[in-house]
Image (tube, rainbow, N blue to C red; front, top):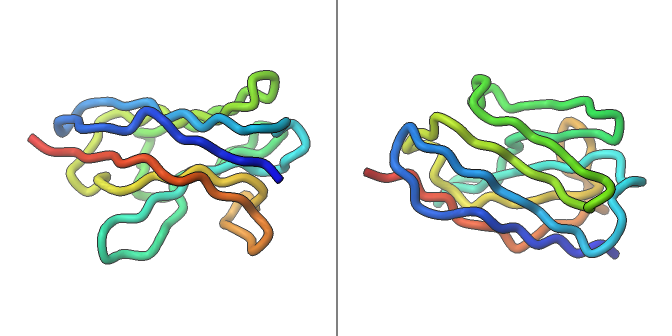
Length: 120
């Protein structure tokens, strides 16, 4: 069972950038889809971006070209580069392994989350 540890969250001003990283305890090369999700207070968890083993990506509409997901199978890491951050991007961001390109599955794995706060 793969364990995921997120890092890179923090406090950033609107318009700023953050890079989130997710380190897996085992190999991710055989995991079809890796992804990032987020959950804001009082709201359900939502997909941010996913990437498959073939490099195909899927982004939520609200990303609007501001975020880039990448994976390094050799290092067992998945990253999310977030630029032009907005107040509404404030949420806990979770790494996901084993979901589909379009959303989570019941058999997938989650990290503990990392807080991203966009505030002036």
